[in-house]
Image 1 (cartoon, rainbow, N blue to C red):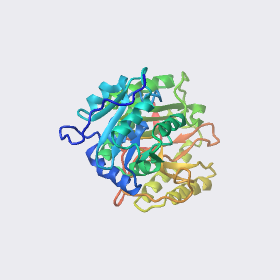
Image 2 (cartoon, rainbow, N blue to C red):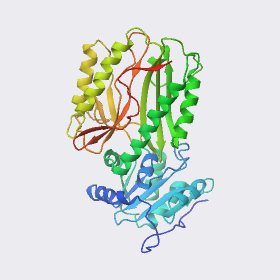
Image 3 (cartoon, rainbow, N blue to C red):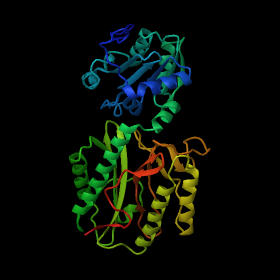
Image 4 (cartoon, one colour):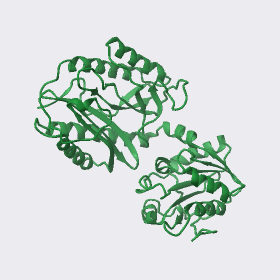
Length: 397
């Protein structure tokens, strides 16, 4: 079934209707609308839907056709757009907000979106939309449905907006950092020689949920020779004396991520591990000293790489990155501080970074990594993942 009009709750002129936008973000979004000379912004990606609304539509990141969007206009009006399967979830999380719903197996979602934009008076206006996320075929059909509208990519502006976290976001990322740090520490403390990587993963999974995380991404449990592999999940490999054990997890609440990695050894370190770990620990403290408003992302990275080279360890493309609603966000403490561009980026107060002095290819048959979360403050850096003392390798006894 195709729809030419949409039954839509409206907040225009109705003070009983609630805005779909988190109150503290509305002024920031309207500043983007002004700066970019836009009449409306349409978010399409899971991370920017969560950024605007404060919650996640569960199946959006699983099924691309289950669109979830937030539409914000220059006059402060806001409308949410979602599939009928998720209508009750959206209404529960945003009661009273304006909502347009398409039927998954009856409607053409893009035609319903176009009708919604027409109802909002945007059929001939300038609309910012996430061109890096919306499928090209869907965008072509949207342009055809609204031939007089002028669409422009808003991805970079939203990514830039998300780089600076407010106090509530930093508090949430601090909580998530401590959940991940403690969950890993407790999983390693419970492990014993003869356990498997799966045993560690089982403890870790239980720990993150017990501590209040809603979800997690990219659990890495890599021991022995597998510790050289960057992003691998747990297997049935058995822990043996002298193994290195790398464990990383990204804990999640309301779409926000905190990534923490810890490295342990089983009973005793293999030859050379403590020396290399000492180098990486020195890098950790050096980076914490360098992080402050105005600091050069490229200079921080170059300092790290110079240290690796002095100790004949192989370089890597970055040592840190922004983090929040996506696992990796700008800026990077890397060879390319901003994705797609080579110019330097400067740190600013309110940024949150995951930074990870690491060396996967030590040449000794093992890899080492320590990943922490840090917030850039007005006068320096605040370590968020502060549960574990990582100056020494952790030990599985």
